[in-house]
Amino acid sequence: LTLETTHDRNITIQGIISDHQTMRYDRNQIFFFVNNRWIKNYTLGQAVQKGYLQVLPEGRYPTAVIFLTLDSQQIDINIHPRKEEIKFM
Image 1 (cartoon, rainbow, N blue to C red):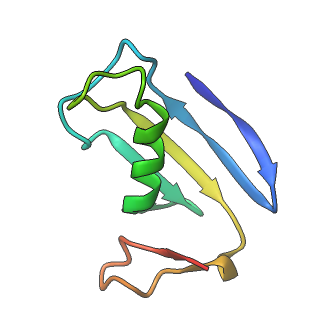
Image 2 (image 1 turned 180 degrees about the vertical axis):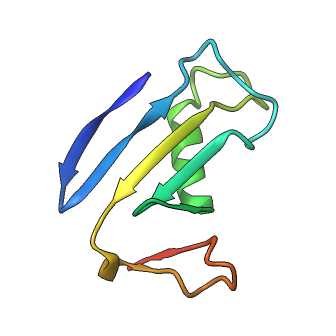
């Protein structure tokens, strides 16, 4: 499924997410890009999983590639040595 481009508070969200019939046994196929930089973010991952809570069996996970574009002043990329994790301000 394609995510529509959303503009809210100067944040653009685009991406592709799986439907309820496509599932994985792990979380390794959920990817986030913020300002075109691949990142890890536990909170974003939990938000995606929560959206599938009533449609996927327990222990199964969706696949997703989500791009967020926002003002660089709203994130801190200096919380991880390899810049993999970010903090939202």
